[in-house]
Length: 372
Image (cartoon, rainbow, N blue to C red; front, side, top):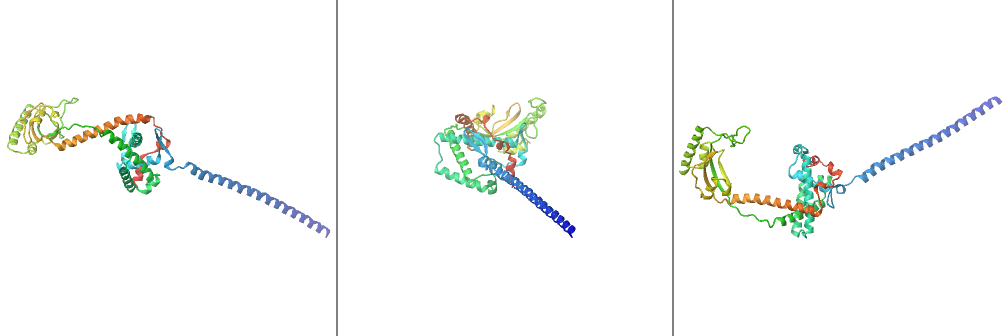
């Protein structure tokens, strides 16, 4: 019994020792598990802080992202986004147009982007000059601005505007600057004077002595600008046709029908110009023919011609041509003054600071927004 008792005591001690070691192992494992869990929590916390903290501190609205600088005026991406979107929509710029090559070193995408930047710079410089000159928007102007802004926002999907960070207030600011710039331009061109010029319209019936192509252009000798003359026989035939046409016209025939009859309608037609600029000998007839009168057959190097005065003072043509002339003159005057305005505010397009955000801009993204 004593031996058995001794064995039991040894087993008991062994068991207790094993339990004690087991408890110690458990405590160690718990501590290790606790450390591991704690470590994972720390890592997870760091990741969450990194991800959400990064987005919080690096993601910025377009209104906070710099695009380029106009003097001491910073332009932000929301304004750029609107102006690009507006141009893409207004001018129907699509992916096919952007794929064209404008110049050897410039794609259509780069070209349009540069033009839009120039336009933004122009109205910002001009708006500043307008303010310096004391120009301001009237109540009527502001009412028009409001109308334009509402119309603009109605024409563009609201989701697209939100995605690009474009607000109504930003569009309002842009339109106000544009209206101020327009006031400045109107002031500059308001005193421009253009001389009234009289234009006449004559129908020129031509019987060529030279070879002509199907488009009514001279056929020229190879590698020269010299037209190819018809044979003497063909020229004599043309002279006979011109004489016959003259007789028919004097008897009341319609000049356009005569042109078709002799197959010269491609080379013939009505032309409008000032009497002095038709060139001799046509200018002399342009000055003297009255409405409905015809000239005799005129013999010049390249053709036989008959002129009929359609309108010796064509006011409609004069208004149209002078409109083109005045428009060109206004554009030239504004451009000349714009150079001075840029100098006045110390802005140089060649030295304009641009951000990485601006450099990454492509019109392809905006085409997608419009097409959606």
